[in-house]
Length: 134
Image 1 (cartoon, rainbow, N blue to C red):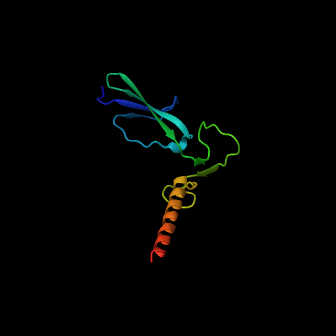
Image 2: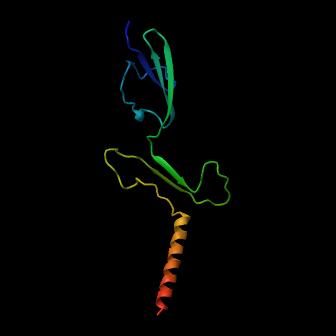
Image 3: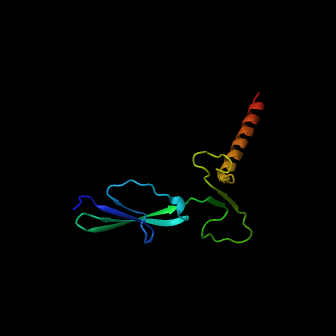
């Protein structure tokens, strides 16, 4: 009888295992072979006495281009004409950083406009008070 537990690793509800190993193991899960979305890793362990244990670990794969939408939120109630900006970009070669298309464009937030107007008003007030002080 061996003194190590055996491990059988499955992805989702597949009947064919990714592999069967003796514990402990280190392996790399290649998610490029999986479609984007929710998956789970199912690990079946059997100790030397024959007792089995199962563990499921859920994870989400997102290898495809990231899609960003501005102007519409999930389950939002809308009416009329809605301006929407959609951006999609991939990671590209992860060994080389690409500047073009690596950021999601966004509109300028309202608080930035308010801060800009307040600062401009203060600057004009300051200039006027300094010029007419003499």
